[in-house]
Image 1 (spheres, rainbow, N blue to C red):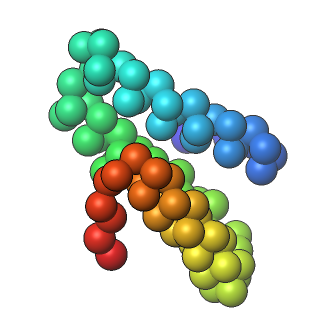
Image 2 (cartoon, rainbow, N blue to C red):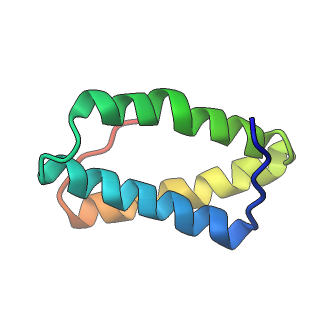
Length: 84
């Protein structure tokens, strides 16, 4: 695999764009669910594993809590029930 280096801001912005674009592409018929499923089940978790290897459990737990709080709040604003 070719080495690609991203700083935290580039990583966050890149992932945000992937999430945003995937949703729009599905709505516009440019991508089907099976393609998105492969992206979310195979590709993004592989990238996540690379990132998580470099951080402590404490850092990951703190970040996950903050992200969970944000997800819950945004889902609530959109009347979308989230389950654990």
